Length: 113
Length: 113
Image (cartoon, rainbow over all chains, first blue to last red; front, side):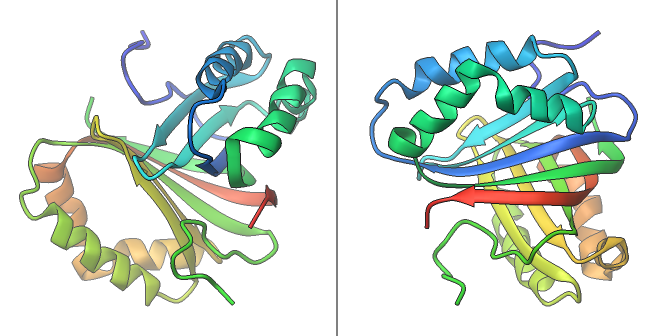
């Protein structure tokens, strides 16, 4: 059973997809925290969502890797109306800059836990 | 020209590969910082290395996404003797647990900078 306190996404065997989102935040919260919480809940309810791992450093640079069953799930999530609004607000207010890469996970392994 | 102070990896057009390394550190440094610096310099000198993005939170959870030309480059880096020793020491001393996923980047986009 998945441990809800674990920072690791409980993933199936590959293949699946990862979206790497690297970003630098602007200064101040300005509604970012509330939006991030809402988007996390919304993503989890999306068909094909497998899990997410996320961390932000004290310098404002952060990485969020979200995992998806297939490309269609990623495209559907990108088009969700509230998410599209958050993306636009992100460019206008919350992010100085960001990079997104969409990749097909071919193999995976781990240690511990 | 690549900005050496940017946290973003200066990447070519896809396809290329990403290795997502998510980990939880054990408490204390215990030689970790010196090893991490040595491995970063060694990875950069590897054939097929494209770039790296990395962040660790104050709770000890971190994500490092490294980018590579192809699977062969990733396999060669994994087998480098000093790196193999660092992996073994990582399991014995520095990491509570970790997850690795190897994925083929199919598309990429960004905003800003």
